[in-house]
Amino acid sequence: MTAQANTQNTVPTVKLLIGGQLVESKTTQWRDVVNPATQEVLARVPFATLDEMNAAVASAKEAFKTWRKTPIGARARIFLKYQQLIRENMQELAAILTAEQGKTLPDAEGDVFRGLEVVEHAASIGNLQLGELANNVAGGVDTYTLLQPLGVCAGITPFNFPAMIPLWMFPMAIATGNTFVLKPSEQDPMVTMRLAELAMEAGVPPGVLNVIHGGVDAVNLICDHPDIKAVSFVGSTKVGTHVYNRATQNGKRAQCMMGAKNHAIVLPDANKQQTLNNLLGAAFGAAGQRCMALPVVILVGEAQQWLPELIEKTKTLKINAGAEPGTDIGPVVSCSALDRIGSLIATGIGEGATLVLDGRNPEVVGYTQGNFVGPTIFSDVTTEMTIYREEIFGPVLCVLHADTLNDAIALVNANPNGNGTALFTRSGAAARHFQEEIDVGQVGINVPIPVPVPLFSFSGSRASKLGDLGPYGKQVVQFYTQTKTVTQRWFDEDEVGGTVNTTITLK
Ligand code: NAD
Image 1 (cartoon, rainbow, N blue to C red):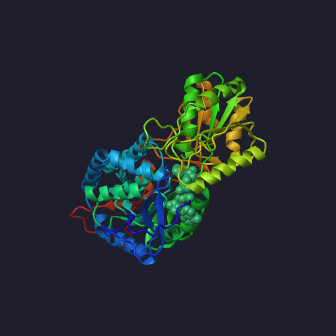
Image 2 (image 1 turned 45 degrees about the vertical axis):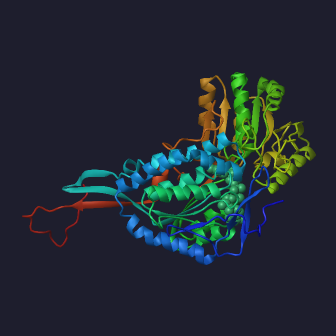
Image 3 (image 1 turned 180 degrees about the vertical axis):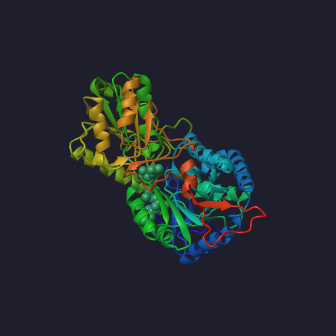
């Protein structure tokens, strides 16, 4: 049942975008894009040939010659138009996303919307890409900085946010004057392609944005190609580490946002109902396939007694196809993801965790072929267990206990990942202590999924991130530009030149 190449010609094909043209790949290697609620084959995606991938990079390299000099206002206006087009097409984009990825329609709109916020930010590039100037650093001498684009940049994206994460990447790269080659996830490339088409409609010139499809070969080409200057990756830790090492060894800039195992800490003074509701959304929403999901909850002290109520509330969540109104949890992305989650649940039982809510094999009327797994809760989980150590990426919650906030903080900091975390409390002092001591990139205080808006940059600690700079916000302007300092002096017309030893004396 896993996605195999469908040989029927009736299924539409996903195109490449090279030099401003949507191109039918000449490859012999294809993969089906499958609706995870029904197993319907929606499209076939090509694994681009080497020639096609090289053509995409060549077209980006050629386009850079003129794009890098395009006035900043002209670049900004394209993104003003682009945000408008995304808004106008929001429902269509969400429907495509739900069909190929499985998340609910409101969640799919959220996926597009969070990307749209980055596009809006890209429209302010005039302010974001300003340099600095120091007047009179020496007599008659000024120094200023130029933030200049790098050249061809590339992005590699995961399946779980096929709208938001591509939009984290190419708008800011292009707005800063670079050209771009994007490789979306081969599992759900259709909404990404629609976004690329809208970018062209908004006025992104031919060659400035290119899209190739594929898997390992496409990723390795991006890491190796001498004309690609910077690589932005979002996906699993295993692949991200490979990308980071390979790209940086080849002299490229790289930033890799990677895997997670996010913990919520619940103190007994927290608002109980709000906390439990927030936990449900963060643990089980999007079928647990968010890098900022909360798959681990540490109940501190008397908060341990909240577990039965958490289980009862969880039972009220509705499992159904993402396109059906009222759905809380849609299918997971693929049959292989479903198999993996099922096998990890079995391992959890085998290793001695207590399965207090078993979501396996839920009955979903009308969608008997869907990749469904309902919300699942384990208690008595220890840090040695596989279900604690592995990123399950499904609607499976591990509940642990701690006696004190400090014990809980130590637990979080001992986990290899540091993507997101949240504390639920009414105590300002506890919240501040948590904020100071926790070693995690995104910290929420009574906020379950604290993804920063694009005024800030996405972050990550330890195994969740490689590279210094985040994928959007202010940091990404630095990532996609080279700072040049210019120190200049202008002579008065009647000055008669300098001596042989004319140097600038910095006093
Ligand atoms: P993935 O690592 O399997 O795939 C990501 C990209 O790498 C895809 O484009 C894929 O084609 C490519 N790829 C897959 N296997 C490869 C290989 N062996 N060699 C080279 N390239 C390969 O990730 P996924 O399953 O699509 O996405 C889920 C993962 O992404 C989770 O680990 C999740 O935590 C992580 N993620 C992290 C963030 C973040 O911001 N930290 C955001 C979203 C997702």
